[in-house]
View 1 (cartoon, helix red, strand yellow):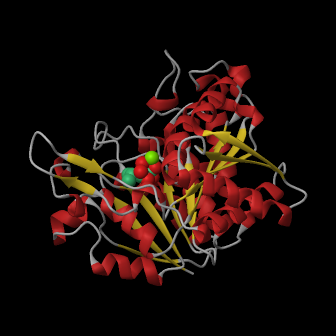
View 2: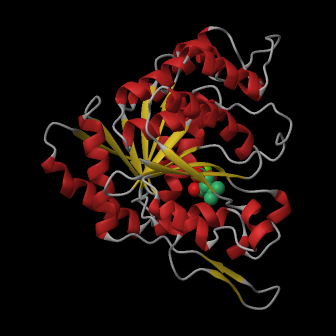
Length: 353
Ligand code: IPM
Ligand code: MG
């Protein structure tokens, strides 16, 4: 098993360092995984003039899985769009066809009161958001800004093929089948033709999964329902942009966006694993970022790509135990609670492993 390590920018390298300590410990215990690192995002742009250098892409393509940190930095925001750090993650998703993004939002019992919502609304929440990653307004053509200053026109295009919708629906139904057998498909069919197609395909695929109950919800209502009563959902399936937005929203139900890992899978189960939070430039370099989403992303990799369920359970269990012991980085600490550093959190997880 070979994995590519792409720490990226901002807090990416800091939290990746903690995940790699966990991985090293597992390797000492006999886990057979080889790894190789490469630069990506702003860090790669600074070194090679491109956020996704050919060598980095090749490493990702040849690996069995990719462990990704985060990309993006204000310093690179003024670059032409094709050179911005975000282009790296979008390019990896597209080039490697990592179309199925699994974003679980689970509330650890220890953190039920870390959410801004009342504990009884979120306690016990176990939600899976499945986000399509290779289509939609992220990649649709035409796109761009044209015209003379004062009369410019900005265009992006919501674009989905039947095949793209169908394959993500299958992931949605299969995932629901392994859980509580309820799938809620998110769209905006009341306004958008592309989203009518989304709903039509969902309905078309449903008979293949008679044991799964399919429902539909407009995205604006879904955004509201997530806050009102998030436990009504089991699995949600959404397009690229709606899934992006709803998954950030869902992260806050869990207390902190610093807690949520994700998997982005291709049709063969190869995957890219990353925290759903970004590079957090405002706290980068200060040693205070929460490394748990990165460590849990490693756990997801062991579970989903390598089918190493026991090893994955060990990682998840060590995180749980660390939270139970009361360790809190700033993002998950309550007022007055003492706060630990990135490396102290990593060290505690390692000890509990
Ligand atoms: C995410 C991020 C990315 C996205 C950005 C960094 C391009 O917000 O993974 O959710 O929009 O997909
Ligand atoms: Mg996002």
